[in-house]
Amino acid sequence: MTEMMSSGVELMFAGMSIVFLFLTMLVVAINIMSSLVQRFFPDAPLMGATTTVSSGIDKSVIAAITAAVHQYRSKHK
Image (tube, rainbow, N blue to C red; front, side):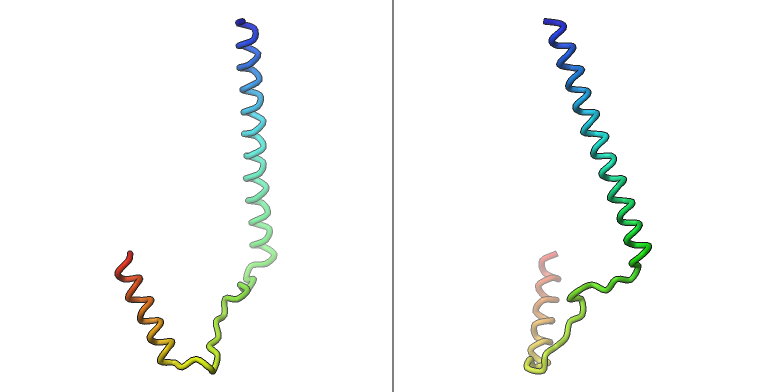
């Protein structure tokens, strides 16, 4: 019985160490890829970040929507 428990504990530690090493390597790889992307593409524009107002929407409607959103956010912090 003691042999089975010790081999079970050894197997548990082996599995946990393999998972820990894999996750550590994954974090390192992600950090390396992130630094490479930031180095080679420093100012990549965001797609859809520019908002344009179409001529069909009245500016007073946009102002009313903006005021309503501001009031909602100030009340629900």
